[in-house]
Image 1: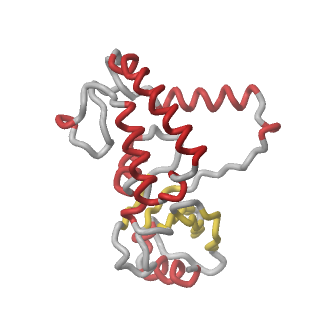
Image 2 (image 1 turned 90 degrees about the vertical axis):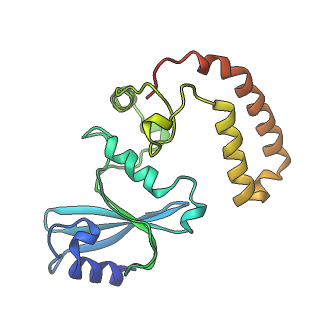
Amino acid sequence: MVDRLVHLAGQAPAAVGLGSSPGDGDEVRLLGHGESFAAWLLEAGEQRVVVRIARRPVEELPRPMQEEFHGLSLVPEGIGPQALVLEESADNPLGAPYMVVSFVPGRVLTPGQWTPALVRAHAQQMARLHAQRFDRCGELTTPEEERREAVDIAGQFAAGLDWWNDNHPGVMNEPDVTRLARKVGAYLQDAQKVFNRLESFA
């Protein structure tokens, strides 16, 4: 994959979110693998971007790439990465769908390294993320006039269970999972009345 990324960055830098082609000494390295994507860091001079390459067919992703990409475009500056490039087709030099986002440096902390100041800073970032309010709710890519006036929390949970059942039936057949899902579903059915009182959404 390194060779493919280097080639694509050299031949079509805009396709990987770069303003110019990488030069000698620039770096391509794997940041890590998740359940759905492998993340590669491209460094070209002062430019640093992350290419997230799908590891499974797009129809099996928990969230559509377009929805995640659109969501990133709504995030206030300074909270997370900026959305740069979306390629949903596998017909490209990388051989898989991918998205490119700006690089946000950070480090992984153990639970014991989380101080009250860090937790407070995290909470403040979350508050900024949720400051923009909406009159209706729904998926980010749904046109506003088609969004709903209430959150169907139990229905969303049921839809999530359906996705797991379709894509990972072995998990859903575990007795512990079945018992937990039944209890969570009942809890959310009872909590629906709380969600019905919401007058705005974030």
